[in-house]
Amino acid sequence: MNASENVSSSSIGNKLLSRYSDTDSLFAKPAPLPAATRTTAIPLQRTQELEQSIKHSPAIVEPYIELSQIYLEQERWVDARRILEAGKQNCPENETVLLLHEDLMLILSAQLLENAKKELAQRPCDDTRHTREQAEINLVNERIRVCRERYHRNPNQKDILITWAIALRQQKKYDEAIALLTQAVKDLSLRARASLQMGMCHQALERPLDALSCFRRAALFRSPPPDPKVASVALELAAALSEENGLIDSSIFYLENLAKLLSKEEKQAILDKIERLKPHLPQSYS
Image (cartoon, rainbow, N blue to C red):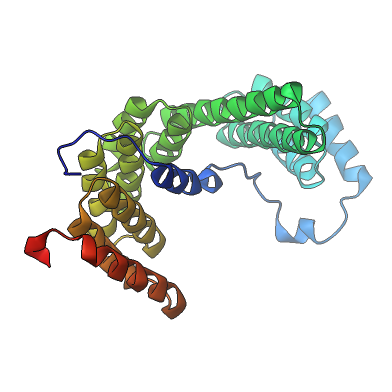
């Protein structure tokens, strides 16, 4: 198969893409309490004082923040949501309250998904599969909403564009994701990560040459050099995609670069793979 032939992603490519879905990078982290507070039990009296303070002075933001953090630390999600929603209503411009509320919504959506997965494992049927699928959709939608709102509040936080694009990619909205990544790639500190995600989108759209170009940039940028994990992922995806499209010389090139980043044990498997590919090189490369 030559590079000009139109091919769809193989099962190998799909498996690689699913492995690199980057869901861990989609944030759902409550703001931490001060260390001194975390190491001791929160006196009940303190939560009562804060509840009363909010009741009598609803326009003062600090009690909302402290009390919601206590409830988040204690995993009292219902109470945290009640306090943060009141905080949003009475102090709608406070960024900390908004961030804490958004994080809580992400946590709750992620918990619903985990519960749905457990229920499906215990009782596999159409209903539990539908519940899990709906929970996955809801979590991705929540991530998109949070990213959109955070970026609109603070357009200088360019890294949110990548998180936002990952969620859009999970929704198969590849062109929308590419549009965001095109902005992110202009930031040198984000260039490799954005290029990797863009390559994944192009691969899903069955644009192998565009995908390879992005993977190459993600792995081989020199200034600043990419994070080794990003480079490794990009090289592995590029090698698999090149092989799928009959570009054996390119596949070997990416594998050789990948081997340089791996431990001795991992490197041997890549070198063995290169040796298996060499007999498939065009005659001019033999």
